[in-house]
Image 1 (spheres, helix red, strand yellow):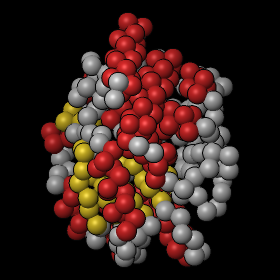
Image 2: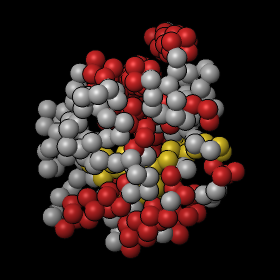
Image 3: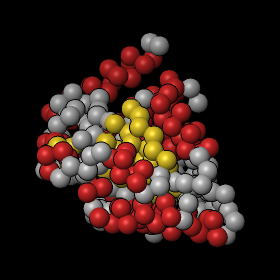
Image 4: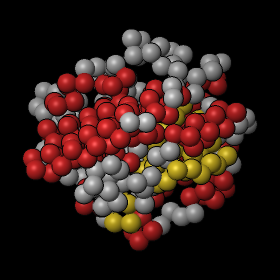
Length: 278
């Protein structure tokens, strides 16, 4: 796919995030929006997946370690064809299969239930090691929040991955610099993130995570790296493309009201219109 095609899909992913969270009157839009390009690139370009066969044993695996940003994953899965886009409006509703956090038992395309922060890389390590032991060539991707990596279990898993030389594992850190209580460097700084992963024998790539050229290059480099896992530290903008949400910690975990929703939809319409002129 061209970058322009991917950019247009990312706008649709963002629209699904806003639609779902507004309909639910709850959820986590900020970190879902910051990762829209990452989700889009993984599911529309990078990963070996088939929405018609979501349990294919040879598929690539994805673990959303920061499970509260499920609206971003759900919107991506819906736009990729795993389930109807219209179902995004049932997010968090009683009886809906689209729960507040990913559920591998009921949601097509979800490889790991998640939501308890810090656990996703451990699960991804297990999947990657199983692939090695079973002689399969699938790859495993795990997306973490930069606030989430303050959790100690992340670094236990990193130690394991580096020691086991899991070169089929790629950990992505959504580095939008904001967590629920404020800027990450004011709450409990995990910086320098790159040096920490390097100390656990990871190959580290630092990029602008909202830029498809840089995402394309980083994932190609990760795939070419042998003998060690890769960590992609992706700098992003929390709440990206929604004027009143950008770089605002206030929108970590709340839904827009009707008036705010109308502004958000108009913001995304303008972004999409500008892309159509290219």
